[in-house]
Image 1 (spheres, rainbow, N blue to C red):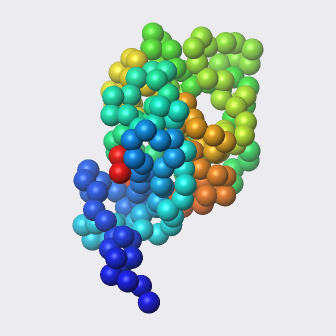
Image 2 (cartoon, helix red, strand yellow; image 1 turned 135 degrees about the vertical axis):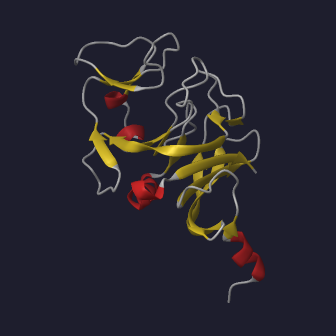
Image 3 (cartoon, one colour; image 1 turned 90 degrees about the vertical axis):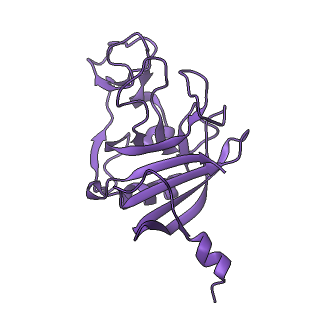
Length: 202
């Protein structure tokens, strides 16, 4: 039989999430690259946990409320999940749009570029300075969702390319999960639910 404590642990309220029906929470103490990740669906004004908690990895700089480009930290806050999921592998059966990565797919991490913190496809063999060649990063980018951090508006130098991707070790600022759990998350997401990710100190 469930205890009162376990029932309370499975229901919670998070500020700034009222317009969403799906929520990913990532919580960790200061000074660690390990976090607890869970999935929630709306239950009235609050949320009911439907999966997790699972162990996730953070950036080598842990969590930060003052994220800057290149600091290795994962930004705290509540952000939408991007409308398109990307990956090196075929579409694993998602409700969100899916783009299979190919040569020439980059994420711009150069603060001086007008395309900073954006996906860009250029001709195969063309290089984008200080940017990430997405199709070359494996296994991390077998699948990844975009965390819409620093997108509205984009602030040069505030950080770029924050993803939810396949775990290998501590990241450069992304959140990562073992592939089976990541696929569970990605298949669960639905665009009409306006999914959010809430990243916070615990």
